[in-house]
Amino acid sequence: DAVNLSSSKLNKVKHNVPVFGLAKTKHKPTWGLDPDGIILIPCFTFSIFTAPRIGKWRTIFETLPKIADKIKWENRVKKVMWRGARTGDRWWLTGIGERRNDSSLDIEFIDWKPSKLNPYYSNNFKTIQQYCQYKYLVHQEGWSYSNRLKYLLLCGSPVIYANFYGWEEYWYHLLKHNHNILVFKDKGNEKSFKNLTNAIIHNDQKAKFIGKNGKALVEKYLNEQAVLCYFRNVLIEYGKLFTYIPIRHPNAVKIDEFLVGYSS
Image (cartoon, rainbow, N blue to C red):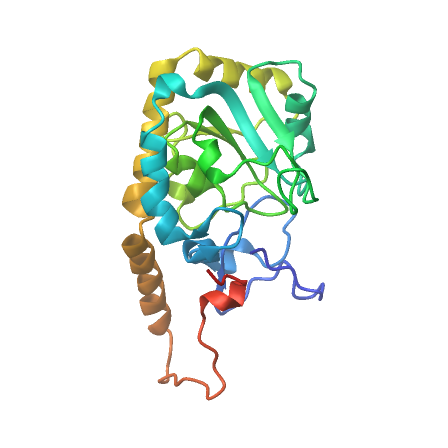
């Protein structure tokens, strides 16, 4: 995740050694380490994620497209949908949906509190599988990046990415506006957002084209083998910088699923 150091002397500094990070942004002002010194590696969710109904990436990668394929395009809910926690700078865009002035928007905050449906979150919570029931999806950044984007793309519905602060994971250079995603950067311009959503809602051919390409991107470049290949190549290049042969520390702990609290 973002690296923010307590020392003002270390923050915003370029270091002469590579720092591995899950995400970074070049948005000013610089928050944490200088982004040019951060080498992006796959997010931990490419292994496993503890969010409800997600779990192992390998399992979601295999099952979610099958679920999505069973939902015909014409049967998907013709609304722009988003659910998420009250983190980061999500208030402006979510506020547009929660005012209920536009029936084509289903955009709401969720709360992590007990409800009639679940002891952990509010009634309006949606699982990642339920996202696939909608024709149009929204992705918003959180305090830093949000790892949900790859899951949304697997649904095969076009995703509107509200990219206000430029957070990126290692694979975001593959995202192409109007080809496999719709990038929205015009924060504060409600008219611009409505124009974007109206345009995609009234152009089924374009919507299906973008959704299909987004799904294909994930299936080709974010499958388990591709992710491991990228990480392996990063480590190979990193190893070339060594002037010694590293050995395993006697107290080293194997990275395993239990470290993120997953037990099933």
